[in-house]
Image (tube, rainbow over the protein chains, first blue to last red):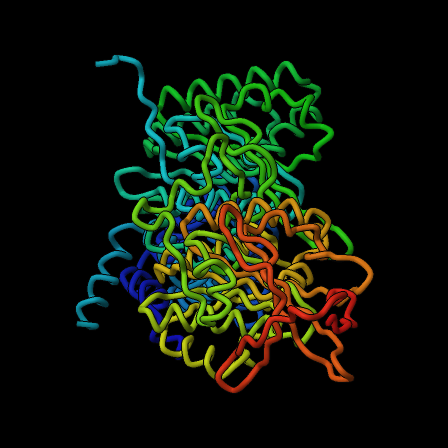
Length: 141
Length: 486
C-alpha cells in the first residue's frame, strides 16, 4: 500500500500544513493531545516506549532531535522536543514533526491496526482530524 | 401483580454461556472472571463486552498492570467479535497503571469513578484486578484494605447501574482467602487442564447470585470466533425421556430399510428409540446404518451422521455420499482427536435442529471414544448415557454402532457396558458353517415390544443387507461353530 494514500497520513499532513508560523508551539500542542489520548489507553510506559523508538528512527534523518527520555512531568513532557524545534527553520521543524508523527503512528498501526490508530488520532485531535476524514469520505463516494 | 424486583438477564453473546449462567447475566451484577494464566479470561471479557456494548449501553474497559494494553488490543483484534467501529463510540479503553503505581486504592477508585461519571457506561471491566490486589499486599495495606476497596467499588458501580466484571489471575488454592470471592455476585472460573498431553479448557460458574446456574465443569473452545461453551449434558430431574415424542408418534415404528429385519424388530424400530448395532469388523454395521438413513431420505426425512470411523473426505459409501451432497444427511466434523462429548453433542443438536433431522447415526462408539480427549475417555460410559438421553429427548431415532470382536465363550453386547442405554440391540456375528464363514444377525432386545428371537443368516449385496433363513436346526450358534440338530 502506498503510504501517501493512508487517511492517517493525510490527517497528519493536513494538520501540519495548517501551521507555518508558530510551528513548534502547534506541534507540541498536537503531541500533548496525542500523548494524553494514547496514555489513557495504553499507559505512560506504553507511550514512552513508542515515542523513544520513533525518535530513534527519526534521528537518522534529523539528527538534532533530542535523544533524552521524555520528562515524567506531564507539563514538560515535550520540553526537549520543543526546544530542539525552535532551533530549526519552520520548514525543517515541520518536516521532523511530520516524520516523528508518521513513524510513531506507523508503529502503533502495525501493532493495533490502522482502524484503531486512526480512531485514536481522530479522538485526540477532534474536529481538525475529523474534517479530513469527512473530505476523504466525499472523495470515496 | 408482584412488586418484587425483577432482575433483567443480559444475553452475553458467548454461545452456551447463558445456559451455564442460568439464563443470562443479571443486570448490575458485580462479577469476577478468574482463572489460571492463558485460560481465556481476557478473551471472555472482550467477547461479552463487544456483544453487549452499543451506543445506548456503553462499556469502559480499565486495564491495569499485567498484560500490556497495547498487546491486548493487538491480540484481541484477531477475534471476529472485535468490532473496531465500537471503539470510542460505545467502548472505551482506559489505562490505570499510573494510579496503581501511586499505590493508593483511593486514587484508583476515584479515577474509576471519574471515568464512569464522564462516560456513563452500562458495563465496566477491570483487567487485571489481580494487579490491584497484588499492589495492596506490596504496599502493606492488607486484606482488610482490599476488602474495603472491593466493597466500595462494588457499591459504587451498582449505584451507577453498571454491570461490572473484575478479571483476575488466581490459583485455585488462594481463591478462598481472597475477599473478592466473598463480595462478588457472580464468579466464573476458567481453567486449562492437561491430561496425557491433551489440554482441555473448562469453565465453572462457582456462584451466580439470584439464579440457578448449571453446576460443575463445562468444556469450552477458543477459536477465531472467540469462546464457545458446551454446557455439560445433565439429565434434568423428572424428565421423562419419551415425553418429547409427539402423541401421534407414540407407538409409531420407524422403517429401517431392511424389511425382514423390521419384522424381526416387531414391525420396525419404535420412534424415538436408540438402537445399538453390535458386531465385529466388517460384519455390515455401517451398511445397516447407511440403509437406515437412506430409508429415511426415501420417505422425505433428513438425518445426521457422526462418522468416527473414517474422515469426512473419504465418506463411507456412494449412497451416503449422495445423501450428504443432496443435503439430506448432515455430517458432524469428527476429525479432531481432542473432542469432548459435550462438544460433539452440541454440534449434533445444532445440526439436528438445523436440518430438522429425525434419524441420527453414531458410527461407531469405538471410533467416538478414540476421538475424545483422554480425559473424557475415562468417563465414556457415563457421558454416553447423558448424551443418548439428551438426543432421544429431542425425539430423534438413534442408531449407534459398536465394534465388538467375536467372543465365542461369553455373550457381550458392548465393550463399554453401554448396552443398557440402548432401547434395542441388534447383534451381528460371524459363524463357521460347513467350512464357510457366514454372517448371522439377531435382535436381542427391543424395550417394551415383542420381537423375533431368531438367529438368521444374512448377506451383504450391492443392494444392501439381505436377511436369509433362520438357523432353526442348529445349536451352539453363539459358540461360532453350530452343529446341525436333526
